[in-house]
Image (cartoon, rainbow, N blue to C red; front, side):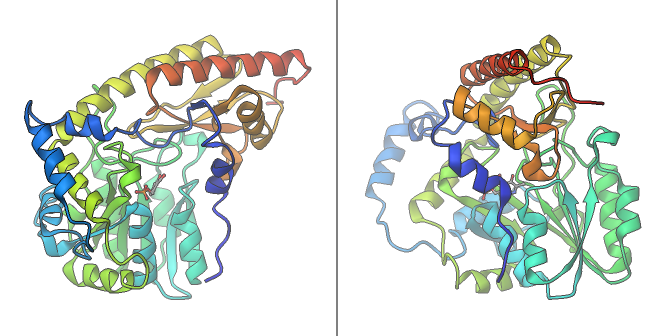
Length: 386
Ligand SMILES: Cc1ncc(COP(=O)(O)O)c(C=O)c1O
């Protein structure tokens, strides 16, 4: 398979372990094992730790333990363990689904800008991919009319990602239902990357149900990485009709085989105590949203945004005459700040910000960015022409 480079990942690997202030962070500030154990009722952590220490590290059940699949199935309607495949993150779930569902020449509609995997892998499979644009002119919102215009009688797959990386757009329940009905009308499947599921803005609106709940043409992809702050566990999953799950599992035999046994056990623990993690998330998101809004107000000549409507991500529009890769490189190299270049998503003049970082680090990152903006202006970088 010939596949185009994953622009954002290539850029991030240069800096992510070197910078002090990663405010492009795409998930919630990760939990430590200590914090995860402390999510349990008082006194239970010690016993769980002992059980983990005694765990024999053989191969795990290849599709995820029954206990983990039952826990995950319980988060959907009419879903049993046979409808769940545990994968190596959402990234493997997406990769398996594209390879199992698609053939060269198939017509696919995928969002843009996007987590690049969502359109680059279908392209690499040889599909004819039309991009469903989430445009700045609409305040980075999904427009289902645009999707309708892109559909063909032969469309095989509609890919959605809501809450959306990188814009923070959300498909409302009514819009998601309409996407599902449109797919049904042409016999397509809806594959929904729900990596940002459960990440509601504190005090904001509830998220629509996962697309799996809408019917047999709906496939949901989930992960512990973003909403549970556990990207290091590399645990994601597919929720889909059982025959499709079985085909994805058969493909997985050639890739990663099975989830790590320890990771599967920790994933169960995290899911059982997810309400505690969600409370922690709400505290982080509230603090960082307030800091970001105040900072944007302070720099309103230079930056603006449509805040995340759910999830953790948004694009900051900056009003300086400098390409986003140059600005992001300068921020990383000279100010130890990571804000992802919009050009890595095909959206120049923007930087991607994430509100999941540890609040003191987030605040320090914004402050360092202010210094960078001031230095750029005093070194003669002007405002961008409108
Ligand atoms: C939309 C989206 N899907 C999938 C992934 C992959 O996540 P995971 O860590 O579960 O593989 C990411 C990670 O940034 C993402 O933003």
